[in-house]
Length: 171
Image 1 (spheres, rainbow, N blue to C red):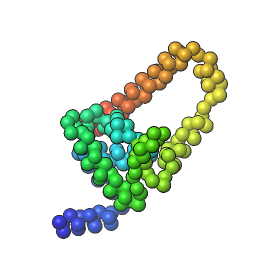
Image 2 (cartoon, rainbow, N blue to C red):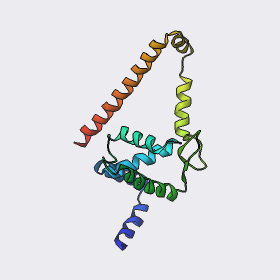
Image 3 (spheres, helix red, strand yellow):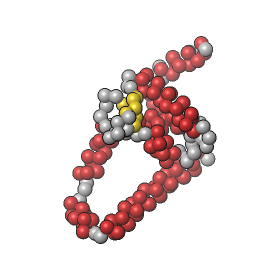
Image 4 (cartoon, rainbow, N blue to C red):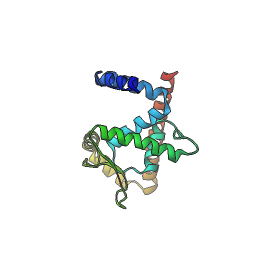
């Protein structure tokens, strides 16, 4: 046990950039670390995600079934216990809302979304072209649905491409 304590104390003295490299390497080698890292990143940026939503978000980044085929529920709760401890160590409290309006995990005392995500949304909204909105409003419902499917399909292709690139880099 004293060896582990000495290891932890020496890690605290390392610059954050070095710790991040080690964490990234561990996440690339170990599915458990990768899942927990993704959970932390998602919960830091987003609020009111339920267990189902969190699992779907993590699986979209890592791979379907990364929580395991059987006993995935236990795996998720074990991961969340570690994630809660990590937030607590940094001075945050991860809580769960059972409200019908906004159920799910959130950081107590923080806004509905992170400041970084809020800035991204504001930037995207600033780029909205009023004439493009007018054109879209004139489309028939079927054409709007097709446009939505097209955008979704493109997003799925981008995610698949990025996932493939990560796998090529690992090999």
